[in-house]
Image (cartoon, rainbow, N blue to C red; front, side, top):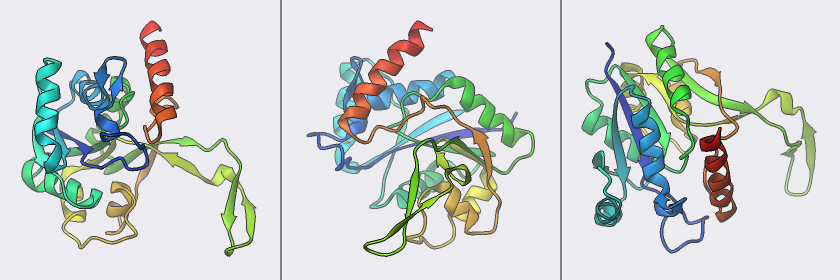
Length: 227
């Protein structure tokens, strides 16, 4: 069987969220967001989980785990950028993993079914697979500071996580220098010339960025449990 490592990136400050604590530690139906995220990956039974945290939040997280009787995965200290946080996790725990996934700590509604499908894509020969959903809003492109133009939304996808890769490929990609053009792990892999495959994502796999997202996630989670 292939060894699989799930990296949960939760080292961000969540400044856009506007709360006293980063969004990944905020309450979602009685439990911190990050615990829901970790549980979803664990319940997929596809591999091991490691969580990347800001060093200033490690003790806070451990206190939350004690309060909620939650067993934390192994913790890796993050860097000043997302790229550095993922690289730290790869260097610390990913040297032997045949498959590595990278998931946002603030996406707590990922389904176990989708995780298994993405991992199986790599087991069946794909090298880089990312979940995505079609864009439903109208889009406009900036021409300059004052002008915009309409673009065909059929040409665009909204990208989600977990993004899943052949382990050796991701290690190779992260051995290259960091670039400001890297927006996610797929862009890091594309930087070394590898093609990334799109896989159908889930509309419910939302990323919590603003307080409204947290409220929506709570409603979605309750509906998913009811189903």
